[in-house]
Length: 271
Image (cartoon, rainbow, N blue to C red; front, top):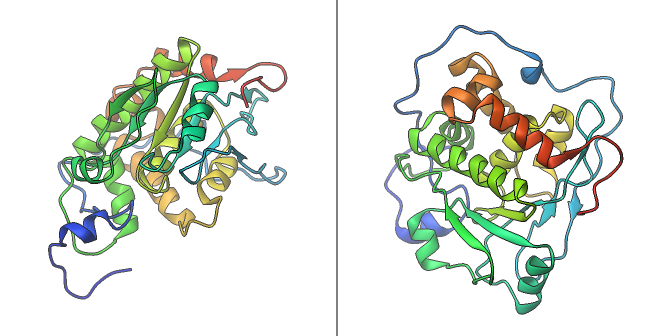
């Protein structure tokens, strides 16, 4: 949706949705030669329908689910240690108990300073909050240019720093045997890209990633996600190089994340 005339939005407009802050790509890295690898393949063909996401009852928030119904391309089951959801401002006592029962030790908040100030999360005892403000350095615009916003997730320096922080925090938490929750406002756009990056980093097929992205009838368009992956390939040459050069997440860290989040045989116990 594009407005014919752009203007700076008021505060209420900024807080109205998760995809409120958009901007044209700024300070993008130098374009590198294209060397597309297996991790950058188009949506996989010849496979059965993608499984439904593993939803969890997290009282007081919405769109809560894990990756525990998914497997990697080579058959490794993905752990349910990572939860994605909307914000936790209305989390109930029951919701807090659920997160404690699931041993959530880290909550990664992808929202802006304004969002966190106006809609603060309910505290979860035993969990540390990591602020990874995806839109901190993104210029504001007056309309929801969602394809442009997803490109901003990839090329904006603040977004790259935030997603690099997210990955490092997920790795640190799951390697220590604990659970982690990632959220923005609605658990849709910023969290959607975070989830796609994690799943692709551990080797999940694009068909499954796209099904996870569009689950829940939240109004997203799979073309936004495809555009973001294509933008990463254009800027870096491959998804691997986007991780290492764009997000500062090394090949060793990626392998450790895969080891921590997947199991060779059968489903993992944390659902």
